[in-house]
Structures are given as structure tokens and as C-alpha cells.
Length: 198
Image (cartoon, rainbow, N blue to C red; front, side):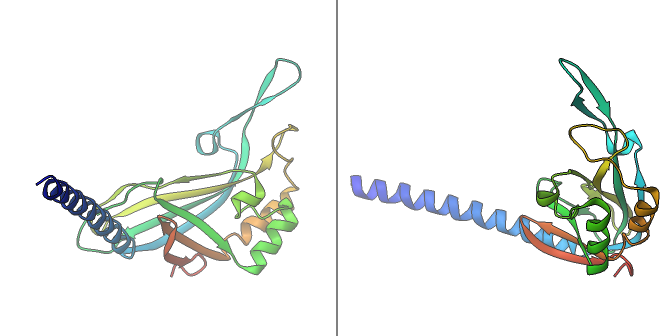
């Protein structure tokens, strides 16, 4: 009788774990299917040190003193449309990520300008920002943003000084030579050419 009781408990736990796993898999598949209904309508890119967009850093400045630094970022804004007949609910930035894969020309220019590949945030160590909206109504648009830190105008111990305006302009002029990649749970689920919006 005891063995039968333990067997029933084990079976019940197995059913519960399997059901939870199937539910999680179904939700993930649904979100990935939703992402496939997104289309880029417009991409804007600018170089900015607008504190409202890029924030502010507090860095050490001598003994027991700090100073505030506003970084300068390469700032992308994507206008994205939900082409499906239903509203799309995304799980948020903890699961959905955006990144840019630069073409060879852009990669060469960014390394020449900044000294590192800003698009590889682990390699550059300069930081980046990301925002997405969790709800997009049917046939409506939403704005996603992605920004990469380039440096700062003021000398400091945290960020490099910005290169010349001419070099920054060349970087901005070529900043759409790449592909926006949307990933979920570590898997790439959508790719969009930035210079063609396809």
C-alpha cells in the first residue's frame, strides 16, 4: 500500500512538472510567433548626449569627490509595426533582446573611430541601453530603442574622450550598414536589414 501511495505521488509530480514545461514551451513559442509579425517601418540614428535619452554617470574626481558625466551615444530608434490581426504581448527586456550586427564597412569604421567594436558590448565595455514596449496593438506601431556608448566630452576615468566631429559624422553616416537582430531566450528569432528595412 505504501509503495502504491508513493507511486501515485510520483506520478502526480511528474504530471505537474510536464504540464508546467508544456505551458512554458507553448508561451515561448507564442511569443516567438508574435515577433515574426513585427516589421520595421522606419529607422532613425543619431549621435547624442541628451541626458534625457542617455542618462548620466557619476565618476570619481579626486579624493572623496565625484563628478557627473553625460555620455555620448550612438542612438537608434526603430518604428516597428505589428502586422498581425491580434495584439502582441512581448515578455519584456529580460527575455527579448535587440542587437545590431554590423557589416564589414561599419565594423571597420566603428573600430577606426572608437577603437573597439561597440556592437559587441562584452568586448567594448562601454555600455549600451535598450527599450521595448511590451504591448503592440493590431496594425499599430511602437518604438524600440537601442543605444551604444561612444565616450564623453569631458576627461574622466570611466569613458574615453570622444573622437573628432568628422569621425563621428562618418560613423553616423554609415550606422545603418548592418542588421537588427531580435532574440528571445538566447535564440535569434528575427533579422532586419537596417538600410532596406527588410
